[in-house]
Amino acid sequence: MIEVRGLGKSYIGQDGGVVQALQDVDLTVADNEFLTVLGPSGCGKTTLLKAIAGLIPWNEGDIFIDGSPVRGPGPERSMVFQNFALLPWATVLENVAFGLQMRGVGKTERIERARALIETVGLGEFETKRPGELSGGMQQRVGIARALAVQPSVLLMDEPFGAVDEQTRRLLQEELLSIWEEHRLTVVFITHSMEEAVLLGDRVVLMSARPGRISEIVPVPLTRPRSSDVGALERSGKYVEITAYLWDRLRDMHEERRPAKAGR
Ligand SMILES: Nc1ncnc2c1ncn2[C@@H]1O[C@H](COP(=O)(O)OP(=O)(O)OP(=O)(O)O)[C@@H](O)[C@H]1O
Image (cartoon, helix red, strand yellow):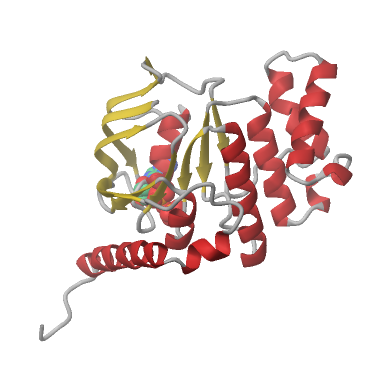
C-alpha cells in the first residue's frame, strides 16, 4: 500500500521565485490497484510520482510504502519514463538485465529473467539490438521489461505512452493490462489522456493546478479483465459517461485559470 500524507513540495525557479508544485496531497493506493493520474500541464503529476519513487526530496508530509517511510529509491518500486531512459550503448538484453546486475543477481539468473520478460513484451528477436535501432514503441517495451525485471510490487509510470503513435499506444495499453492482470502490481500511471486514464484505471485521480492538489478521485466501475476486448469497453455507456465527466471537470479547471474576457 502507498500512503501519501499532507505532501507539500516547492521548487526554486530560475528567477529565484518559489514554485509551489504540490500542497496538502493525501492519497492512499491499495495493493494491486491500478491508479491513473490526470490533470492540467504543470499541476505536479511528475513531482508526485518522483516523490513516491524517492527520487526527489519534499518539504512537508510523509510517504509510506507498506508502512515504511520513503527516504529514497527502494527495490520494491520501479519507474517507467516517457522518454524511455534506456542505456544507448547497451543491447536490449543488457538494458533489461541492468537493474538485476545492480542488485547483485548472478549472470545466469539475470539473463534468464531478462529473456523471459523480453518475450513477454514481444521482443524476443531483438535482444541483441541497441535502443537506437528500435522504434519508440519497442523502446518503451524495453523500458517496461526493465522495470518489471526487478520484480517490483509498485510500478510508477510517467506518461509512458506519450511519445508513441496512436496504434502503438493501443497495443502497449493492452499489453500493460495483460501484464498487470497476470502480475497484480500496484500501478500509479500518469497520463494526459482521459481515455487512457479510464481504460486502465480502477480510479482516476484528478489534480488541479497551482499549487497541485487532488481535486477529485473518480472511481472507474468497468469490469475486468479489460485487456481482451478494449474496443467493446470503449463503446460501453459507462466508459463514455466517465470520460465525458472527466472532460467537463478538466475544462472547468482550464476556464478557472483563463483570464476573464473583457465585457463579461
Ligand atoms: N526542477 C524544477 N525546478 C523548478 N521548477 C520545477 C522543477 N520541476 C518542476 N517544476 C515546476 O513545478 C510544477 C509542477 O511540475 P511537474 O513536472 O510535476 O508537473 P506535471 O503535472 O507533471 O506537468 P506536465 O503534465 O506538463 O508534465 C511546474 O510549475 C513546474 O514548472
